[in-house]
Length: 99
Length: 485
Image (cartoon, each protein chain N blue to C red):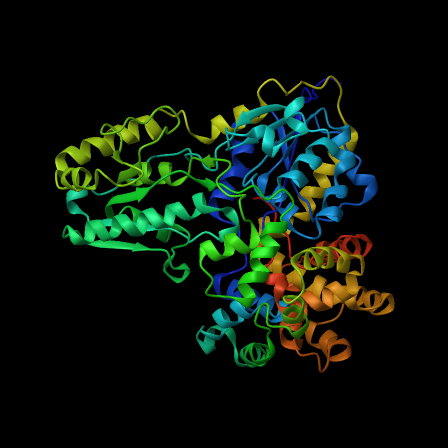
């Protein structure tokens, strides 16, 4: 049984909420309220209020002032600590922008 | 065994498809299944968790696609490249399809050695010894373009005289770390647009991201233009480890309005324009399919396009712009040029995806003599893992994986066990009430669980949870994966 178009749209909205993806949340916020449902739409609006603007995180901005070689090494070193990397990537919104 | 069919060559295509992947990447991947009907072609996303006992397969041919190799730019590359190395070492032959080789090329070259790649397909014909200093000594190289013509009927398009836009193009302003050559495409398009506008043509050329078209809208736009302007794409700066890219990014954060010359002086003085890493753009084929007359910088285009016969040649310094503009006014002649380009690029069949598959697999496929039981288990696993996309669509697949990676993977083992045990027997509302009350995404979670239950995908979902929890890469990668269907 294939997911219908409206159900598919709602599932994509769920993905946007779960991943805190600003671009997808902005897309969801532009959908008709009836298509998404009031409860999901409330979560979209809440998530959008908190969703990071990619690259605007304080630590990320701070690292931009470090020499490029240090940044390059730091980006790789932080992945040795996946939990810190995970938090940093999600908090900064960079995980949606890496590709 | 009597009645059992003869074993077919086993081909494994490793890819990195995402929800945001372009149609050309999907076409590219699907071409292997389409053009190798005598082989058992399977697709594996590098991120897809595969239990160790299932993943111990030995394909006859392993094809590694460019979307996977582009992850060499990612800090996660050391983890990613180790993941399927054992399969590559067991494989009969390994083929790499590279793109954008001029960037982080040493990482790509080292990977080719590490995985013992047999053949490398690259769109760049020049300076291969610079791009692949180690592999160029003993690996086989073949040309693999960045795009081909899809098989199937050629779309019907309007003749030039009925089109509303005279000159149309969308070009991305390329980042400075690719060098001056990469800037040329946008510069040429903007400069020629000004010439055409001054000559009284209706022009729709833009380098702004917000003006770009995605999916079928791009082809519709191209097919509504009489002319388009272009040249080969590529780069002139070699950035072996991606460090120049980091330097440029860091400089741009501090000086967002910096000019190319200033960035060059600060980040890569004296390094640019030493190489010509140019390659044919897929736009060549798209324009031919759209029946749009091409104004191209005079160059060698696959050895098949002749200036004035298949395209309007624009000199590099645009010294013949008046001659080109005059030719653009003769629509009958330009319609003949369109027909000629279509014959050379599309009707000839020389540049369809079969050519890519041939370049990648020619002479490397061997017929296995025995049946491989471990391959059968692998195929069964892959097919079950992708079943939800096949049966229910990508949206349920993506939302389920996002739920797993964002919520379930940060839960402890007891909570995960409790969730798994209640999925088959308890309604989504009750699960959310008992486990996710107060969670900022509780309605989204409820909706995903409800969809999984409604579409009878609970066992698939539980399998994905178990695999993701055991998988070492799942906790590191922040993206989700997609299957090829």
